Length: 248
Ligand SMILES: N[C@@H](CCC(=O)N[C@@H](CS)C(=O)NCC(=O)O)C(=O)O
Image (cartoon, rainbow, N blue to C red):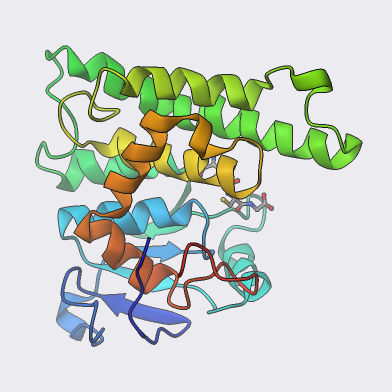
């Protein structure tokens, strides 16, 4: 993937989607967004930024560029008992859980976009993947990672790990579907991208072994809204102070 323009972002920035990529001028006071996304570079908070960019919704992004600890301190200040990314302030309410935040935004502001019609055959799959992304894939991949760190042995003698099994299940679905929402791109794709990419990033699963997932990831990363998300949410093409990711 090639991406990322030279964009400066401070600790707090008001963003008008689409218009922010080249020159993220702060929004006028009257247009002050009702959504503030507390963000860690390269983490799940990118889902909410990506969603807003897909929908064309304004938002304010809070993070400390290149400083995951500083970004986390800002999160802790508003959500001391559950300091995780994403944490958002939406119409004055402090909320966590990316799927719930996405659902809320879609219910209130999506106008039917990015969710298949409830009566359509795609809706059950969309729901499955919306929840599988955190309930199984992310959970299993992160459990694998912790096991690997604790034991220096991810799976005895080539056995499939739970994270790899979850990757295979997702890959198999994409053999017959363009998107996790079925025929059309949906919020389920936004939910699934993070753990699929993360599994490869933290070496729990080699994405090359899951060709349908790999091709789908490329399609996701080519979306203009995804690129706009990267430009504002990973302005240096890297995660906190770690080396640059996917930047050639
Ligand atoms: N299920 C939650 C998971 C949130 C979460 O664990 N976020 C990570 C970043 S990707 C985090 O903040 N980790 C910091 C920590 O757990 O201390 C969601 O989907 O929002």
